[in-house]
Image (tube, rainbow, N blue to C red; front, side, top):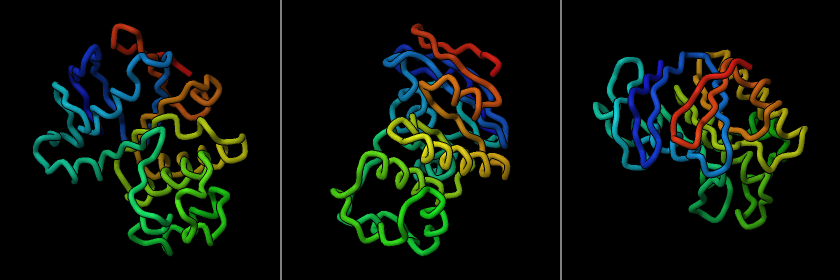
Length: 198
């Protein structure tokens, strides 16, 4: 279980629990702080408060280890090498998921510059899924995808949730929030959250 108590970053101040095998949809207007919250939980930005995974304090483990277990996937994934497969430690192992997300097997050799926004989103998600994290923090993972690709992403994440992964999923899509979320958190302009049932 992920436990967040009095997490503070700029105007944000939140407390909540995220159970194993639970997907919570995070909603709120643009600029309200959804990405700030996700980045703070992953300890990518300075923040205050208590964050634990299975009772272990975030500060009790090295930051790279925390981020491997509690993984943030940005709305625009980062790329640091020329070809797609250079961003994966085991490209062959990723191929079944590549097909699931509607991408061709040979896309590993593609240069990053060739990728569309939607392809970058799907491959960034795939890169995160290969880590087999305990908690996945998703920032608008289907925002640039067509309905078929978005459905493939939702199905894949649902499988991981059924296997016990916890997900906090930021989305502007109300219908998607109701589909994927067992609970819905609405983020307010004052930096707090309130829970709505889907």
